[in-house]
Every structure is written in structure tokens, then in C-alpha cells.
Amino acid sequence: MKYFSLIVALFFSSAVQAEFVNADILPKSKHTKAGLYLYAKDAYNKINAEAGQSVFIDVRTRAEIAFTGMPSNADANIPFKVLDQAYAWDAKRQNFAMTKNPEFVSRVASLVKQKGVTINHPLYVMCRSGGRSAKAADALTQAGFTQVISIVDGFEGDKVKSGTDKGLRILNGWKNSQLPWVEKLPKEKMYFENELAAKDRLFKAIENMDSDNNGIISQREFEMSR
Image (cartoon, rainbow, N blue to C red; front, side, top):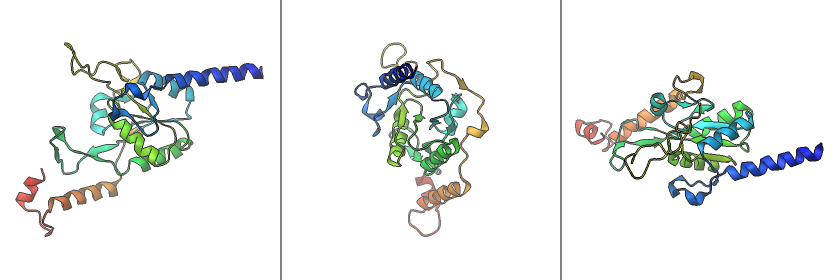
């Protein structure tokens, strides 16, 4: 019986290894320092098999999950990036600028402790399509977490590159894989910004508007910051 159990354990161990995605087939924007990648459907199966001995974080913004929903089994939404407090414009992305969430790593660490696991347990991160989750994974790896796994197709999946469906996110991803997700968000899993941190961000945004450091924000400075 003991030998049978060992064989079963070895079998599942090798099966788990086979599920990981080879970095060679991924764009560099999805590469991480840990080098651990899974597609959404495989991540879902692994998380279920680990039975609470791992942590699964949705790192998208609150606005994203408010409009698109989030995985049913995600432990929490902890945004890796948040909207710039002054609503600065990102000309390259042609969208409102995003800044790193200064609370990200500390909030993840708190959640890990709350779940009763350690920095050496599997930690899954997911964004829209795998780019942000890679950066979030690197931040966590740098902070000491040893098994940070990026879900490379994210919640909405990759875009089709040609044909009549070009530009649509229908290739893969959590939703397209028919994995369970919720539209009504559980409040206990939501991210609420620390009040002091929120005020600090606001004050910094105001300081940035005062380009000549005279303590007064002129109309011109206000317009230039937009």
C-alpha cells in the first residue's frame, strides 16, 4: 500500500510539472523571474487540487472587475496598478495613466498570513491577459515569495491577430474557457484602499501639480497636469 501511494504521488507530481507553459511560446512581456506559467484552465484545476494550500489573486483594477466580473475561487482582488490620482493621460497607451499600487505587496503578504500559508506555497496571479500579472509576479518574487505563478491568458484572454475576429479576446482566458466566475462581487474579497495611503497619494498628486513649488496651484499648472 505504501509503494502504491508513492507511485500515485509521483504520477501526480509529474502531471503537475507537465501543465506548466514553456516560456519559449510566450511573448517577452509575459515572462517572469520565477518562470512559472499556467493557462487559466490548468490553474483552475491545480488550485482546486491544492485545497486551500495556495493563494489566488486577481490583480486587475476595481473598475475592471466591476464591469467584467472575477473568478469565483479567487481569494481577493488586490490591484497591482491603480489609476493615477490626478487622472494624468498616457499618450502611448491612449488612456488614463496607471501607477503601481504601493500597498500591493503588503496586502498580498497579509492575505497569505490570513490564509495560514507561507511565502513558499503556490501563489497565483491573474490580470486581463497576462502582461500585468507578469509584473505583479516579479514584484512578489522580489519580495521573497518563491512560487509565484502567472496565469498567462488572464481573465479575458489574448486577442485574435487576423481574420474577421481580429482584435477580439476570444482565444483563451478564464471566461472563454468556461470557468466559474461571478458578476456580483463578494465584498469580503474586494480591495479597499487604506485611508492614509489614499490621502498620501492625493497629496502627492497635488504636489506634482505645483510645478514651481510656490505652494499655489495656478490655473495653468492645473491644466498642464491633465
